[in-house]
Length: 225
Image (tube, rainbow, N blue to C red; front, side, top):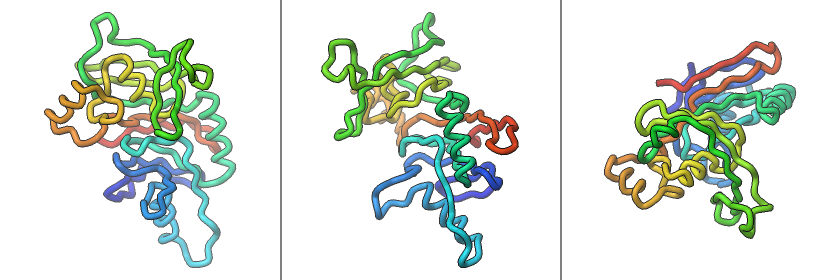
């Protein structure tokens, strides 16, 4: 298990790498002066290779928001990238998240499915729930997730769709923002986050299930403790 203070490599072979990234590190960034997970991994590979070796191929398959910690798959060949992307689009990569939320769901709502339509404001880099009749409703995309409250204020979430800021927006809309979320949180949830001295978004991409693109073996990874 290779480690850096910003990420941990949990698995690696000729086709793919599975990495746990810390909160605050972008998977990819357009900011020239800012390092991201992809560039850090490429530097690591380059340092292990001899000068003049072939160009490094790394393609992130699932993406996480910069404030979110958790598991990311990188394909190391175009063949693996194509196969894994096909699995992702077909909903065959299972993504499980863990979240710490403000408050707690009612007893009759401890487990359920949240279905909303989300519109992404590209300029502001925020998403919001839109309803029929709203100006941007037809530009929105359907968002769906399954949640289970496994302990008071602690959720296990399975993403059914993968939209921009989806979990954060849907939980906030449901009245239970993620603690540490200063973008989508309510005044009450933000105050509670400050009271608990929470300094990061309490959302972790905790499990990944998929099929190896070459061996076809089932793969299962969980975030380190």
